[in-house]
Structure formats: C-alpha cells, structure tokens
Length: 80
Image (cartoon, rainbow, N blue to C red):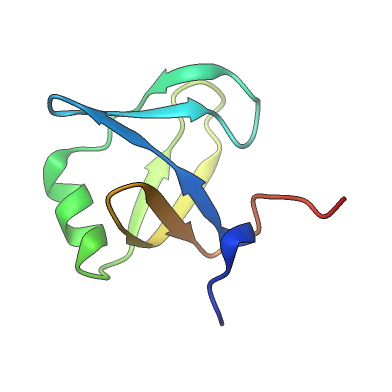
C-alpha cells in the first residue's frame, strides 16, 4: 500500500504529551492522547502502533510517524 496524504493525520507534541488537534472520528478539538514518547519513537522507526482516541474510542493503526504526521492504514481524509 502506498501511503499518501489521505492516510495521514497531524499531531503535536507539548513537552512529553501528544495531542491531536482534531479527532478524525468525532471531530473533538485538542485531544490529549495517551500515546507515550516510547510509542512515538517506535512508530518513527516504522513499528506499527495502536492509538485509541480517548474522546470516542476510535482506533488509529499507526504504521509510521514523522515529526508532524502519523501515517495510518486507514484513509482519514475524504475526497470532495
């Protein structure tokens, strides 16, 4: 599978906390995740990680990550 922009979701780091500015499932703003620094490091190494959104319990399967985006196995951005 080719990972394209539709399969990405932005995140932000503040200190050791990881925030999602908007949940891709329920659209709640400023979601503090339970994702740990160690999990982020593993994702950046290409080791698959699971993130359960605390707001709605939606599940993101993270295949990879960079400093700004999670790369998932699910199309998160719709086509207009």
